[in-house]
Amino acid sequence: MQRFLLFSCALLAVSASDVLEFTDDNFKDKVAQHDVILVEFYAPWCGHCKKLAPEYEKAATRLKSNDPPVPLAKVDCTEEKDTCSQYGVSGYPTLKIFKGGELKKDYDGPREADGIVRVMQKEAGPSSKEITEPSELDKFLSKESAAVVGFFTDADSSLAKTFQKVADTTDDMRFAHTVAKSVLDKYDYKDEIVLFRPKAMQNKFEESAVKFPDSPSHGNIKLFLEKEQFGLCGHRTSANAGKFKRPLFVAFYDVDYVKNAKGTNYWRNRVMKVAKKLTDEGLSAYFAVSNKGEMLQELEECGLETSSDAPVVCGYDSASRKFYLQQFTMDKFEQFVRDVLDQKLDPYLKSEPVPDNDQPLKVAVAKNFQELVNDPDRDVLIEFYAPWCGHCKNLAPKYEELAEKMKDEPEITIAKMDATANDVPTPYEVRGFPTIYFAPKGSKSSPKKYESGREVDDFIKYLARESTNELQGWDRKGKKKGGKKKKTEL
Image 1 (cartoon, helix red, strand yellow):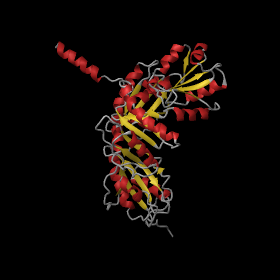
Image 2: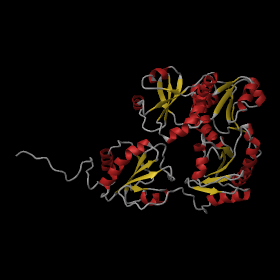
Image 3: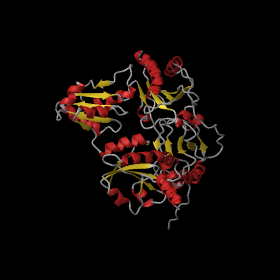
Image 4: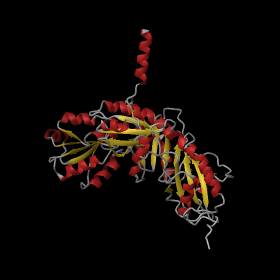
């Protein structure tokens, strides 16, 4: 019996979660108990939700011991439908930040543990930490990420106030400020804003501390931080990947600045040597290193395989087309960058085989997207879906019925694309499933996101209204043409 009890206790300890679970019955009361809380609205079948779950759990555990603690909660929208409906949840996962029991805003930040922690810490505490002793700043700068510090002789100066506004509106960087004479004297900065690179990433190719050089406006400081945040070759993670500009060249290998900073910098320094040479020549490009395990999906999407300790490289040109270098040497890497920038290489395209498309509902893949969706003579309604998505499965028969009804319209194409098996080209953005766009034949570069109802009649009314030319079978109000006229009494 004792062994059984010990086993049961151990099992409970393993399965215990730091993520709170709310229901329709207790949601308002529970949310009101916390000054700030992040809530995930999810569905158990959702692939994106399953991917987020371990990161959300890790973030909840870390934020539980934050000062002050920041709780994370979740709501199962397949069960708690009233709450999800009240807050307009239409895709999964949807994350929202509540303060004082009221909805503050949608969470649109990173979806991995480090990023969630960073954003919610800023939501819960001061956007800029006040430093009063040199030892405090030493500790602040010892962390793994870059830091921005304001050194002020007057806390009420216009420079200090502008700095605070920038800190208030920037979620992805750490800020601190000081007016303490002992700190100003030790660091030898006065009325300066300085970006400090993490110690583990300091190198001989660039300055470790960069002073803001321009007139102190909010916009100028933001531009300075965007330019200098990652330096010549930044550590790119799933949390900050969207912050890196293009054309971009990413070296993937066992990047680990916690357990193996020296080994990480062995390869990073070789990337940086090439980057330094090319940027000094005036070539415009950005460089980064990423952990190949963390970014495995991105590796696969770029057609890369890792079989050795040496990096593999994915290059993204300014049009977000992908190119890959499988065998890294400094000479090969330099030539690869030059060839991508000079448009001498064919891009890699993740695509399913091109289908026959002999049915009313057309199937788009990456290799036929230009021909099918960007057809200059036809308006196109396209659904981006995932095979595992429950909403997509519910929509499928309605969408097929719509295609059947539209099959004789000479200027309308109804199409779908598996966004998990094909590259989704710009300017389309797919963050949840299903995502539907309408691409008018004269505006293929600016497709409209479809946000109306998902019944067949809703689609028909939308197409009748938005089509470039009036449909043959329906008028602009979505009424069927050629229907029986009402009898009138004489």
